[in-house]
Image (cartoon, rainbow, N blue to C red):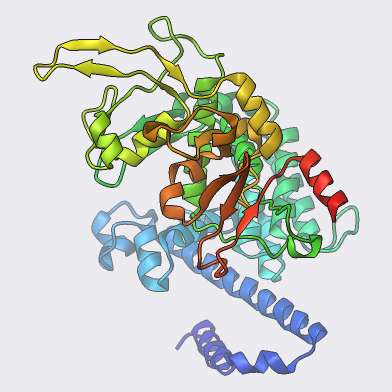
Length: 462
């Protein structure tokens, strides 16, 4: 056997004796953190072995004869597949190993077979010392090497030495070793200094690749794919931060019980992002700031038979889409929008065209926002300006368009109120909610608000 392989086998046997879940319970806090630190250092050293091995695999693929390539002889079409099959890693992890290897493992000369110096030699030394693993390598290498030929090699080497020294605790400021995230921040700063002309080419590339595509409707929805400009993605993340911040307040409970009243949000992260996008689109369409379509604001037209809407059986249709949608979707759209009734004869002739009925005017909306503060479902926290107004007694069932019958709900809770388990009622013009039984087995009706004025009044009454 090879000496390196012998040592790895010995390490594998030794590591197998360490896997004992009960061993952690008997150590104190300081030793537990020390165990975590030492294990991480070993992990980084093993990363160095993986990166070196993958780098050697890449170097051996330099032959121009396809049948003689290492990947071909082992039945793999590229390095990624070979690494995945050998290491049992996910494709993304195998790709990261290959990217790290290209930065710190030198290529082999075609004629002599000699190992050439890597792109970032100082970072390689930091890797071999156990200071950085794959995360740290990519945090430094990705920004430094992205400039290509626009930055002189000597300048890249200088940045490589300083950043590697920072990872080794030998940096200019003498700070403790930096984690991968801090190394990335510093590497990005070096990139901005060294590659001052790089922003424009990257911006052109981003602009060229931007786009959003809606696929054909399927049984599970409409697929979407695309690439956003960095500033657009950043703005979307800010919207997510603003709209997904949980807050809760019951006005009829003492302060110490408030934190307990925090229901579990069953949505996945992707579902939450979808609902943020839906909210933003709804607010934008209602803002009055968008260009008109056919002389009017961009309006989503939904058609549904009144009998179906009342009975709760049937389908609705969206303008420009032949695929049916549920009556729940139609009711959600109509609850906070304009309704116009059209009477048709059995043959399809328009017999009567009703006038538009705006559900809640701006004065009513301001009053409801003042009373409710935001979405009234506890733990939601969506501000009033991003909420829709829901008829507690449905408009289609004769519910009045009055402040005593309207409450603020965010897009998600409005759209899925019927299946969320939450119930809403009005008690002398004040909204109350009842939580799902799985969360509150008592089934109590509670007065809710996030209005600062009403909250202050509630505190004064206690």
